[in-house]
Length: 112
Image (cartoon, rainbow, N blue to C red; front, side, top):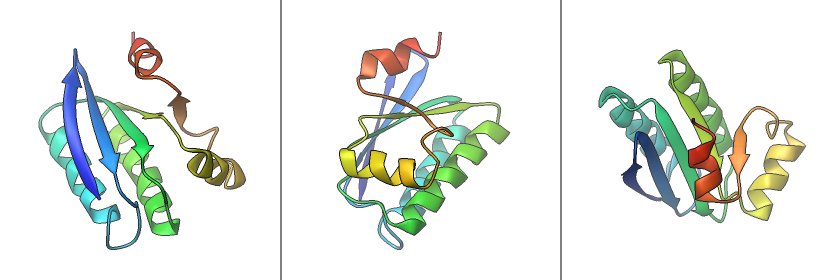
């Protein structure tokens, strides 16, 4: 798992690449989120276009990330869900918990 961060206006976009699984991406995501929140960013987008697989630990970390961001007064949105991740979120009834967008501009516009 690799996470690249880039800022567009006042929104921090985290481009995730690789599997979001136990021991591979879950701790990395947690550390990155804590880091950007500590830097003062409150508008976050997780770009999942290059994430082929999410296991239960990865899913748990996504939910934990959402709660961490909300506790700090921030907003977290998902971008470019793959079919597999969208199905996983639908089956677990989490699709209604996360705001998700198909293109970056829509996600950015949703913050205003």
